[in-house]
Length: 107
Length: 125
Image (tube, rainbow over all chains, first blue to last red; front, top):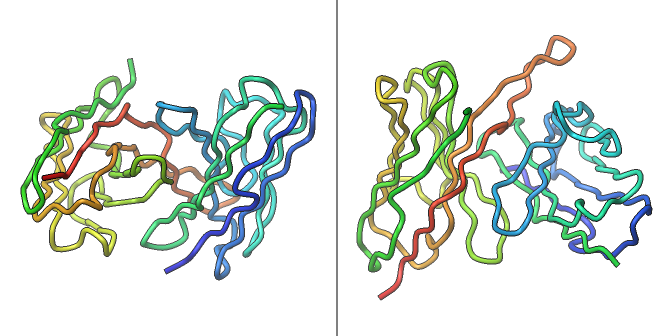
C-alpha cells in the first residue's frame, strides 16, 4: 500500500503569509495526487487534482506542484477563510489513501 | 441542486449491523463511480470502498473487507453500505463521495469532486 506523509501536521500563520504544505509518497505516484480542504464540521472540498490543476471555483492563491514522490500545496497569501485542515490523496492505486492532514491556524 | 445526502447512521453495539444510504440528485448518478470515505472523531480521512458506475467493479479497504458490502441501485439514484460485525474502531462519520475522472494531458485522473454531509456511526456498548 502507498503511504502518504504530510508535513507539518499543523502550522500557525498570519493573514497574507505564504504557506507551503508538503506530501511525500512512499513510492512514485507520478502526478496522481489530489488536495482537499476540510473545515470543521464540513465535508472535504477538492482544491487541486493531478498534482497541479486547480479545481473550478477555487481561488488562484492555491497552487500545487510536484510529481513522483514529493508534492506541495501552496497558499500564496493566506486569507482568514483558509483556516482549515488540508489533506493530500493519491489516486494512483487501490487502496486509495489520504495523508494525515495539516491543520492551518490563523495567528 | 447537485448533491449527495447520506442517511442511516446511529448507535449500534459491537458485533451489530447497520446499513447506510446515499441518495444522489442533480446529476446523472448512473454515469459515476461512488466511494465511501470515513473519518473517526478528531482523526483524518480513510477511504473505505468504491463501486464503479455499473456496479461491476468493487474495492474495499483491508480494514473493512469481509465485513462491509457496497452496492448501488441506479434506478433509485442510491448507494448503500451494509456494515456488519461492527467494531469500536468503525466509529466515524461516513461520507459518500462522487468519483470524477478528469483528463489532463492525455492521462485520466480520478478525484472525489462531490461529497455528502456525512452520517455518524457510533459503535459502543
